[in-house]
Image (tube, rainbow, N blue to C red; front, side):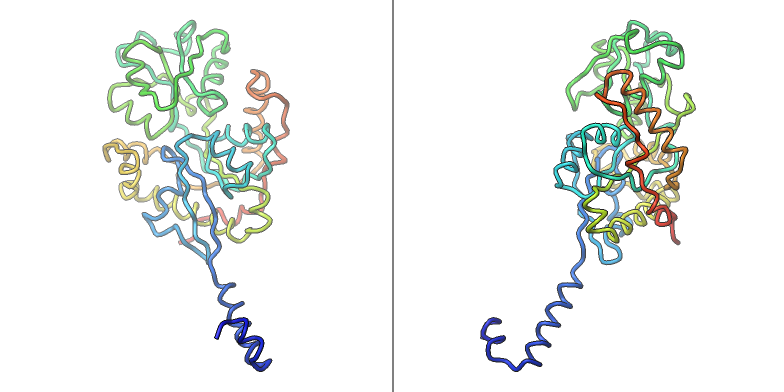
Length: 322
């Protein structure tokens, strides 16, 4: 007998019992949170390594975006994902594009995780030596912010260098050695691989006194309809980052994902943020500085007030629980 015929002929009490059981089963189904992450620097991509991919009735569906931050932000705006893991520039670009989201968590500083590098035998030794040189970076990213900030620290601007934009996936170390470019800005884990093969670091965010942080966005719709799942995700971030900081050698899944030497990946892991920090006025002010600079440089088309895309409601979830 099918379910429709059962409800037609069963006694009311029996029908109510079946309906209650079906409703209870549906309520017990886990909530799926769609997380966009990067193979290069993402956190959720190794959640399974510590059993952190499921928690509190939530399953984290890890969606790797090889197309980089622009593809993630486009998916967030289109409602195809719930959460995105990005750098500090990501929220600014997304806000300028009109996406509806909130920054739900940020990491502790990551001062050595991104740097401007040159070939080992390059005559370039200082930021000032970049004047007139071909410097590669990706537009509207943390890398562009690093280049701008480094130049500003010595009274220079982007007009003083030859900004060079290479296709995604270019082997930047090979480009440096071949003289296609003179310098480039890039991020861990590939940064550690380039350095292991002879690239030389000129300057990083820590040298400039502006240690960058990873930031985590959730769409307004996800916060509205899956708030408990978003909170669970922040708790898992805190737990996973604390575990990774204490056990960098155990996060070797990154080496498999990127097909890199585990020793190189371990170098990058030891430079990773140690955990999350509460969202506060200081982190909001740092994002505002990036937004103002990007507007002045024509990276974004309008001035932004970044405070409107931050929320402190998940700060309590950002504390790791043993």
